[in-house]
Image (cartoon, rainbow, N blue to C red; front, side, top):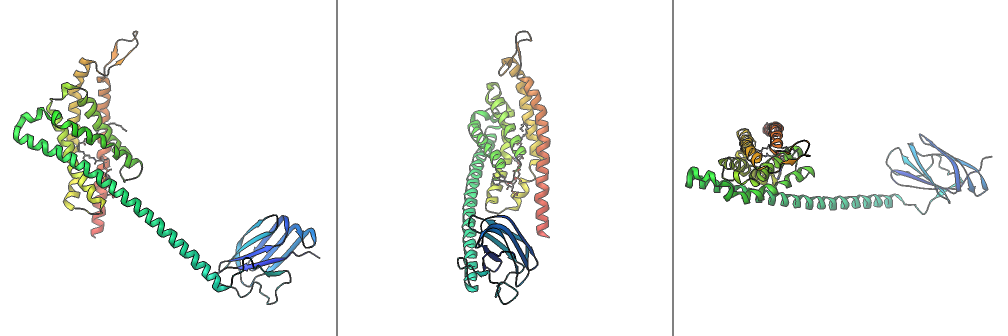
Length: 358
Ligand SMILES: CCCCCCCCCCCCC[C@@H](O)CC(=O)SCCNC(=O)CCNC(=O)[C@H](O)C(C)(C)COP(=O)(O)OP(=O)(O)OC[C@H]1O[C@@H](n2cnc3c(N)ncnc32)[C@H](O)[C@@H]1OP(=O)(O)O
């Protein structure tokens, strides 16, 4: 005759909990099929160390997956009900088996269980609401940060653009020769700050591509700091005017476009300009930058600035102009990558708009 352990039970709307009074249980075997559960294990029960087993025919079918956990004192079993609901008793037969008793440690009647569900639900909702609040706080902080960043850049580039335009009207051609002296400080500031755009893209703060942003920032800063900044001979060249004018022409459109975007607003003309004027400006900008690089080559050769010293056996040094030739090729590649990126952005933008309009 097999020995039967004491079994305590309780229920919730979704689960059945069984507690089997066996200490140090081993070789536990629990099987569930439709509404039938079979249990077998070695352990220390009411009749000492022995093999114990029991079976239960549940009131309704249960799910086949069963979770059991054994501790030094007992074996806990959780069975999922086939259908969410309250059972009036555990077993199909009205007369309960003698080894079965309610587990008063976990016992709840139907209304208590419903209350428990409601409390859990409320807790979940409270957690959701507090997470939502945190997210909202983060979003508004991000929006404020982006807005201020875009505003500062807009003001900087507007100052540059307006200043250069006014000077062009007042001084005519003469103004082309002293752009660097009048504008460079603000341009340095704006272009150093533009490194933030690479970080924004890298950390997912905005949906820009990292490579296009990097090409843009590295490309411009190379021209600004290495070609213009380090060579006094370049300061009075008209090419500085064209490079600065082309850069600022796009930025006085791009940053206000982003500022409106921070508030999910747009002004159609501005959107059209942001995604269209790069078509002539970008190649012109790269052309102006290439002219600046080409003009600087003889100066680097002559001054030997940034030249790379070589061991005596090989010769004197490698001129920095060698790096500039490589850079001219990179510029061409950078132009292709960014042109393709901006073309895709333009298509995406106008395609979405058209779809929304339909
Ligand atoms: C790997 C390094 C190698 C280095 C090699 C160097 C090679 C040198 C190559 C040199 C070429 C550079 C030449 C260049 O300097 C010449 C000129 O600039 S000439 C002037 C004309 N230029 C332009 O028109 C380009 C202007 N620049 C840009 O458009 C961007 O910098 C660029 C990264 C190229 C593209 O922009 P982005 O990917 O950001 O596109 P979107 O505007 O569509 O933005 C995507 C979404 O992100 C949101 N966003 C982005 N930034 C912000 C922000 N600051 N604030 C708020 N929101 C932002 C934007 O709203 C879009 O959102 P959504 O998707 O919801 O619409």
